[in-house]
Amino acid sequence: MKKYYVFSLIGLLIFLSAFKAPNQLSNPQYPYYVVIGAFEFKKNAVKFTNKASSEFKSTTYAMNPDRKLYYVYMLKTNNREEAIAEALRLQATSSYNDTWVYGGPLGNESGVVKGSDTNPVTKQTVEFIKPADSENADPEVAEVTERTEIVEEEPEVAEQSEAITETAVEPVPVAENTDKQKNFFFKIYRADNNSTLDGNVDMIDVDRSRKLATYEGNKAVAVTSPGTSSENIALLCEVFGYRKVQKNMNFGAPEGDDIVLENNTYTVPFELARLQKGDIAVMYNVYFFKDAAVMRPESRWEVNSLLNMLNENPKYKIKIHGHTNGGASGKIISKSDKSDNFFALTNTKEGYGSAKKLSQERAEIIRDYLLANGIDASRMQVKAWGGKRPIIDKMHTQAQNNVRVEIEILEN
Image 1 (spheres, rainbow, N blue to C red):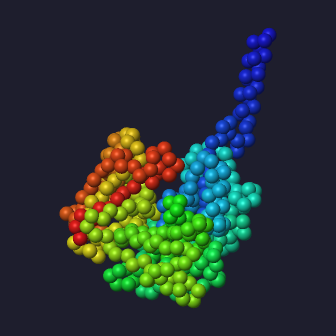
Image 2 (cartoon, rainbow, N blue to C red):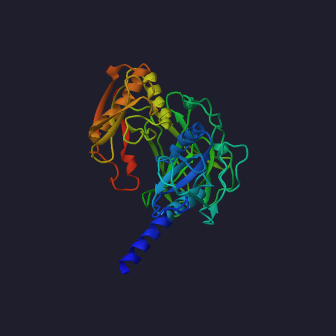
Image 3 (cartoon, helix red, strand yellow):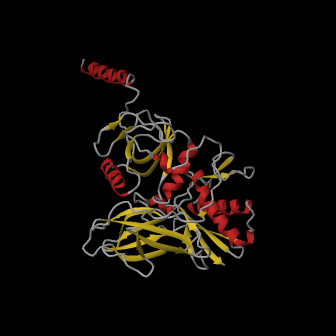
């Protein structure tokens, strides 16, 4: 009799599990994302990702399968409190002051659990999300239409626009300077012709050796005090294709031969020179599909920046270094010889190989793109490292930054 009850109980459990609600799983384990924008059209998500990537190197996008919107996010974590804290930090210190947290499936994540959007301030669920490329954005979600150009969906990502403009925007003070906050205008321009460059400036807390915030160049911004007793800061400007420039100063009394206080705003110039022989630059905004030597569409802008640099300087010769996160072998997806699309998983072939082979093919796909756009093969070399030269521990939450391509200038 006892045996009969046991089998009856098992049968009942199996029966009940068959009628689970479609939005329930026995063990739903999904990450949390710090989301800075949502878009109906993929092209707008790509454009917004490109712009945000200059501030947050790990920024990417993926489809929310429930809402049918492309979510642009800058952090993925399994810790909800970490995501909430980062969203609050972004709201307080960046232009993404309506950042929110999403927990659930994105992109290729499988499962039937519906995701949940959370307001990090109230920690309440956001029921309705209106895409930024819609006529009316929902008040609970970021109004990001001011930060990106809205366009209709197209099959291909547009070619990069010119990064150089003729004149910088004039600084306009936004408030009186105080001990806690001051107005700055970071003027970023080329050393050879004084033309304005698109770029950002990172503010570093010198005493604690950590980044405090990222500010957009060539516009007036309100910069917050580091909150340390010394108030010593470093301002770091790095634009791909140009040498990095760092300026050290005291926030309490910003002084320097080239720092000008006018109209209640401190103008700090960043004169950027092209890379020279021996310099190595990381292509922070070049991303690859998983297990693939194929670039994602948002990589197009930075690869074209490299192309422009080589076209501007015919004497340049470069070495393209490929790196992976870890040294495990596995599947490798490569572009088919018959395909001329370097930014999509169409007409690809699948193979198997080492991490070094994957890093080799990723460096080669950039070389091949440059070849296809008129750069002579004699000006380029390729070096594969696999996972031998990580910049972050491979188990760290930001270990994806180990997956990178570096450009070394051999001759100029």
